[in-house]
Structures are given as C-alpha cells and as structure tokens.
Amino acid sequence: MALHVSDLTPVPTQPVETRYRRIVTPIPAPGSIAEIERLRKVEPLSMAGLPPIVWDSAEGFLVRDPHGNQWIDLSSGIVVANAGHAHPDLVSAIRRQLDGKLLFSYAFSTKVRRELLERLVSIAPAGLNKAILFSSGTEANECALSLMRKHGLRIAPGKIGILSIESSYHGRTLSAKLAGGPPGLVDGIARESLGHWQLPLPGGPDSRGFGEDLAGRSIDPAMIAGIILEGIPGWTTTPYPAEYVQRLMRWAAQHQVLVAIDEVQSGIGRTGRMFAFEHYGIEPDLITCGKGLSSSLPLAAVIGRQAILDLAAPGEMSSTFGGNPVSAAAGLECLAVIERERLVERSAALGAELSRAIAELAARHAPYVGMHGGLGLFHSIHLKDPSSGEPLREIADKIVMNCLRRGVLMFLTGRGFFKIVPPLTIAPDALFEAIDVIGGAMNEILGA
Image (cartoon, rainbow, N blue to C red; front, side, top):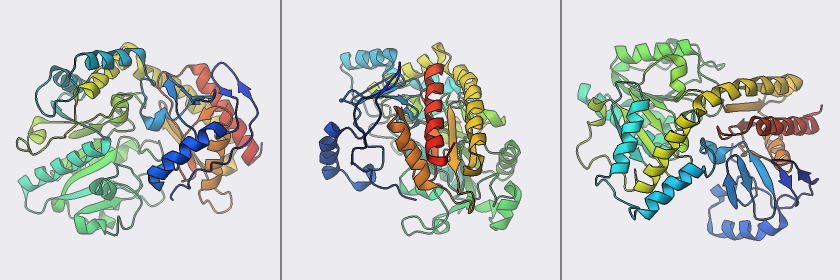
C-alpha cells in the first residue's frame, strides 16, 4: 500500500503550549507551504508521503519548525536518533573531526575507523571478530547477502539461495527488496528466478512453524546459502516466537546455511538489548546495523566471523563513503553515549512502562486494534476494521495527522498502523504526555 502525497491544505488547530509541545499555527504551517512546494518541484513523488512540516532543528526528543511549532518526536526521524537528536557529545565529536581536516578517506587506513570497528566487534558475540562499514543499512544488507552466497559457493555449486520472511524490510536495492516486502513480483521479477524464497511471517495466520513452512514450499536445503531476518520485524515490532528462531538456527547449522540478522531498526539498544537477537538466546553468523548506530550521519556496518568477512578479496568489498571519518566519529561517540547514559537499560525499563500504557489504549479500543506490541522503545499499534478485519489504513494515518496537530510527531505508514519509536533519551513525562495525545486522537477518531 503506497502512501498518498501529503495534503498541503492548512488545517486550523487549537493552540498547544506545554513544557514539551507548542503548536501556534495551522498545520501545515502556512509559512511552510511554499518551501514544501519548491522541494516537490525538484524531488520525486516518492519523497512526498511524510507529514507536511519543515524541520528546522531537532534536539534531544524535540523537533521544531521555523514557525514556532515544536513536537515530541516519536519517530526518531525514521528510527535513527537512538541517542537523541544532536546530542551535545555527538556534536562535539563531529566538530572535532571536522576541525581535524579529515573528512574523507575511502579505504585508506584511519584511526577513527579502526576505533569504531574495534568497538563494534566488542559489543558483538565473541566469535564475530571482524566488521566493515557502509553508508546505509541497505548497503550492509546487500553485503551480508553477497557474503552468504560466497560462503555457499565454497560448499557446492548452486548453493546460492536466500530465505527471508514475508513483509519484512531490508532496504531499497534489488536484492534487499527481493528479501523483503509482501509476496509477489518485485520490479516485475519473480523472486524464485533469482534464488530468493520467502517464508510466512512467524506467528502469523499462514505460518505453521519453521519446519512446516519450509516443507510447504518444497525448498531444497542444498540450494540455500543463507537466511536473513530482522531481529524484530519493523512492521509488527513484535518479536518472533523464540522457538521458531531457535529451530531456524538448528536447521541452518545442520545444512551449512548462514544466518544474518538485520538489526538496522531493532539494534543499538532500541529493544532494551544492544541487539534484538539477544532476546532469543542465539548467535547469528552476521549482524547488519545502521540507523541508530550513529544517531545522525550515514553509517552502517556488517559484523561477522573472520572466515566469512574475509571471503571477499582485496578491493572486492568496499564502499566509497563507508566509514568516512566524520560518520565514524559520530558512530564511535554514539556508542559511547549509549554506554555512559545506560540507554540500553533505560530503553528496557521505560519500554516496560510503555507496553502497559499501549495495552491500556488497545483495550479501550479493542474492536479496532488488530495487534499491538513491542519491546523497549520499539512499539506499534495496528488498526483493523471490526467487521472485515482489513487494515484501517486511512484511519491510522488520520490519527497520525491528528497527533501532529496536537504536537506529537510520528511518521505515516499507509499500512494501517503507526509506530512509537522515540529517542532512547526521551523524558518519561514527555513520552507519556505523547501517549495521552495518541489516546485523545484515538478517542476522537474511533470514539471514546
């Protein structure tokens, strides 16, 4: 389901003035419309689906426009600002790197890249002792998919197949799209023709368990090189059944299949653990991460065993801007902030309170809530038609826009749900003020 282009008709609002929220104009702000229209003239339609506001500054868990409005941010941009927007220590680290006059280095050696890679290896399971840096989570996932195929080809010709989970998200490039998304063609291409097979969402109505799901698709293990799955699905924000994941890991080990866990959204403390896969008691062969790894600049990574990471020959696996010194400095300081401020533990504790608050909201509107869930500060609420069970796409997006006009920022999904993924630094009273706003919007639109 594609998003609609955000409407630029200003909607009158009631003035809002609290410690954290301020709304003083209609939304979108009339003064912002010309800027958004100019942007849309030079940018493709695909970029026009988010709430129509102009970001002027973002600090901590607050986002401001140039017209006097301020929002509590429940989006972290797009699940990026784990350490908060413009954390002062992060800004200082970036400034120091800028002042050092080293802004680009490609694959030439730098101290800051080495320090970040050592830090990444230190937070991963002990056997995962090498890492490589990229510019985006998509790039990291492409690397992981390629490495799994290289490993498979060392075992047998044709062992290049990839298994993944329906309705997951791994990025925008072709292999990443083949691994994610709903069933069906991808850019007119049948997945199976390129060696990709999807399994039903574990715990969903079409899943019968890992073994039966495999058998139902007549998949030959000898042809499979790797499995990629999100640590916790970004769509549902609800963990997979632990038994399913553990059985998957046993099957993979039995058939010499590598497992890559995509932690781009769910990693770096987001779910109350450094990596979401820790909730299952497993150790994957490869970890991909990004987004919250820097809380700011383009940065992603693949972490894995030396025997896997070294499969690519010198010059065969690199990235023009991967691990550039400024982004690396941001990532190194981001991880230091997360450790110093105990944000992983904070996410777990605050997330438990958030779970209870969301459960109360869901119970109040039970006929309209298809599912809700999450761990840490990684939650979502999915709405359904009480009669048909179909997702209430327009209603969910209407709730997001209603909250926007009340000073709470989320992103539109166009899929019948909204995500609650604030910076891990959010003040508890701000978080629950925002949840009250969501509750008020749901009461208004769904009925009290």
